[in-house]
Length: 135
Image (cartoon, rainbow, N blue to C red; front, side, top):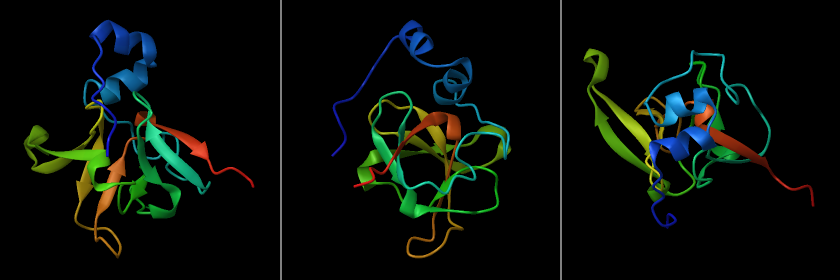
């Protein structure tokens, strides 16, 4: 179950985030393919929202889609993200946002691997990474 909704003023988000993180998460931007963090990472751990730290994706659901953005076949929980219809740029896509703080994360496409057949294509600047502990 997601944490309680997080809401901040524009000034609070700007103070918390880098300019690139703000542009992507609060202004629904995107990073250029093959340039953001995590697109080629193989490290084991958890990816969380850069705005509110809600856990979003596990590394064991990450796969190399060849698209240049970190890609996952499912979120950590079905209610960790929300889907919003996006008709920008003359396209019809499904936008993915953090369910806790409404941060723009990326989009989901129906061309991913089994078991879900989905590809959550996520901006690396919208996430933080916590490596698995070495116990």
